[in-house]
Image (cartoon, rainbow, N blue to C red; front, side, top):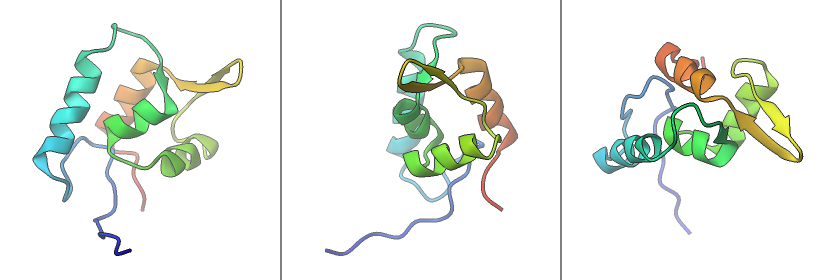
Amino acid sequence: MVRATRQAPSLNGRANGRPASASNAARDLADARPAGAPWSMADAAAFLGISLRFLAKLADEGKIRSFHLGRRRLIADAELRRAASEGTGPG
């Protein structure tokens, strides 16, 4: 199995080497949500264009604040949009 390589992810909303359809899908995901609703980790990672594992690492490091609701780990809408606009990416 051959894996495709891609550039380092960015949290600032830029395509960063991804196909244009990926950023459109992220916008559609954000538009379909009720205003202010918390994001699941999987949806937040898809919105930011990063892996779930990298998002969990950012949350563990305190770069993105998350909270638990039962067993689920969620990210507040305002926090996710703040992280996306600030570009809290690697390096």
